[in-house]
Image: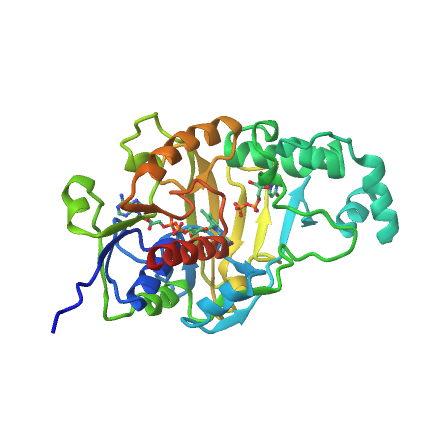
Amino acid sequence: MGTIALKHLLVVGAGFAGSVVSRELAEASWKVRVIDKRPHIAGNAYDELDEHGVLIHRYGPHIFHTNGERIAAYLSRFTEWRPYEHRVRGVVDGVAYPFPINRDTINRLYGLDLDEAGAADYFERAREVREPVITSEDVVLNSVGRDLYEKFFLNYTRKQWGLDPSALKAGVAARIPVRTNSDDRYFTDTFQAMPADGYTRMFEHMLDHPSISVQLGVEFDRREMADSYDHIVYTGPIDAFFDYRFGPLPYRSLRFEHEHLSGVEAYQETGTINYPNDHAYTRITEFKHLTGQVHPGTSIVREYPEAQGDPYYPVPSVENEALFKRYEALANAETGVTFVGRLAQYRYYNMDQVVGAALAAARALVG
Ligand code: FAD
Ligand code: UDP
């Protein structure tokens, strides 16, 4: 009787990418060790009770939304859900308008009374036709024209990225739709919900498998670890993996300023309020909207964009993507390592897209 040699996998990072791959490979009878340099699982989706007992997202607001039925069904193995549709306002000259821009935004901003056809007509007259549409500036000017661009997009984007919209690829601003109706939801995906007991609990369930061991506060060391495993799944920044051989790949960082307002039951009318033109922060989020928690006080977070610090966003410019391609060529030549996730693939992924990429990576490994 021979014994079957178990395959050993090292997963670097316990966020969505790393945790989904870990679970899939454990279920395919691999033995999985997950490490994360942070003291907790869940990556940037980590949530926790603050010292006042309010459930907050340490790394900024995370709202789950997807059109991928398979992805929602997959995560539903590890959590129940609380239906939640996110709403955002954008403050211009002290007034909070529906954002993304819709019919009500322009009616209120310009003192109009347009119906849907009127709003479509308004955008048609206001837009500056750009052909082809290449940058984020093109996207916005092409759809709503210069005044709305300057009021809602230009300064927010400069603050968020330290770059002009003209220096960012179209995909960044194309995340934000423009609507002629009065739908003021931030997302229109078919599935929009928050994990009923929080993201961290969902990750605990995902990683709770006899073949998965998790070690926190452990930094990946290629020289020390690479030879001990049949395969490595790496979900950190790709430039770091290759010792910044071609120079650092820019990632945008944020500083999160959390605040608890004791005795204040509700702070703002929607989950998030954006401040395109005022303040050093981009937006304020009040977590109780997202979580539905009932508490006599409330907790909010302000996001201050920064060039240095923990990497949170790839910066989608033409030159950064060219630099990424050079790292990607190195990654493709590494047979024993899979690179997956927002930092490793340098893609402006939402959570559901990371789950999709991780499921695909796991499938490729299981064969
Ligand atoms: P991460 O969550 O970053 O996980 C990578 C992990 O690897 C980290 O925990 C890190 O500590 C670890 N790691 C890195 N390098 C090493 C190393 N050398 N050794 C050990 N460990 C290492 N998406 C949505 O769908 N909806 C939202 O509303 C939303 N809001 C967001 C708001 C903010 C402010 C941010 C920053 C992101 C938001 N996202 C949102 C995107 C979402 O956070 C990501 O898509 C997702 O968390 C990425 O998962 P990941 O596993 O690829 O990376
Ligand atoms: N954006 C903007 N004004 C806003 C909101 C968004 O100009 O009020 C632009 C900005 O460039 C931002 C991008 O649209 O980075 C994507 O916005 P989203 O809210 O999707 O960003 P995220 O939640 O990923 O930080």
